[in-house]
Image (cartoon, rainbow, N blue to C red):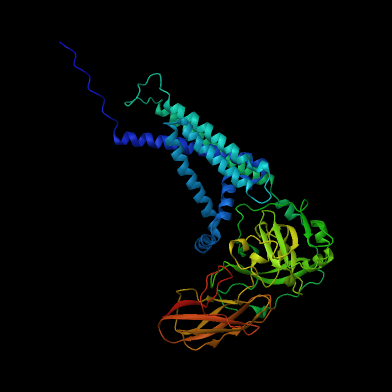
Length: 529
């Protein structure tokens, strides 16, 4: 009796190949979690803004073309930063899975992917304005930890178990249970390091207690309360003064700059005779002024939400600049933020008599962190991108010819004068209203010019003047109302337009926010039942 030859082993099935690929991808993902966790821990020494994902996200914001930025603001609103960070994490996960697939075949190839990730993060951190060499450390640490982790896990994957036969095809693997345990442990350790690192960093740089300790002096000449008649009694209409918690926020900061007012200084320099370094205590000893002002964002679409009214408190910016001695030929004031943002304002407008402030408070409390604590600029008549530097640390008197601020370099209008705008807030879009008298109401603004007339029309009929609420001043929006005799059931289109105090009528033609602010008439559609 002769032994029959052993038939060749059947090639691994599709399910087996998928399981192997999933395991390899999991190795890459676990290595990425470990890398990001290590980066977050390292950022404890350098600040949250230097963490790998935040550094890459900040660089991505700077490099994103303006049309894509506008699309993000228009589509995602104030959630645009969360969407960006989510996209970066998703992209990182995809490349990490690829690194794992490479590493189980060629371990050093997977390590190179993580090395490239670390190099990208280091470059991004160093590209930020005012960055120091140490700011690239978290990304370098993340790259090294990711590379080392993927090498170790991949080698465990490739090393044969003492009691396990090599798989067909010649690739020996260790026990799946052992590899899964090591991978799961890496996931857990990396996640714990990331969460712990972020919590520790936030605690180290937290300025909440310092903000709470700020004692605001009384204004030298307090403004009277706003007239109650400035706000029509129409349910659903925005409050005349916007609560701080509801005030819009549109900026490029992925993490809020945290500045201890005890360490804050403002440098005033450039084309001045007497440069100065101002501390927060010195700023509070200046005669403080109040300003009721409506601030709007140039990214606001027609009828959009990025506008709000507040009572600011701060030191007179023109007085401080004149004290520094402005030299002949200067025509631009550039504010620099702690995070490197630059905003340029026409100097003649700052000095023309309007109440421009170095603001330290809004609505009776120290500036919220998200709105520029401890100090920001406010200059009526301009969109925020040319007048409102948050987290202000530097003021340079210069010329338009010598320097292009952040948004001007990206194609936005150099001046940023607020366009006349109006919107319908009541009824809500697509509301169903009963036949009879229907309250229509909203808000209009033409900052530093004021609103003289608001008109409403229905179904392209004749324009009818709305009733204007009391005028609280040219730097503030003006609310309005109109009683519409809705007699015909069905769908109707309501439109609004405003005329500013110079007599200029809000243009009908639609224009996108880029490059100088949106134009066009706001409208809403309702159904009369």
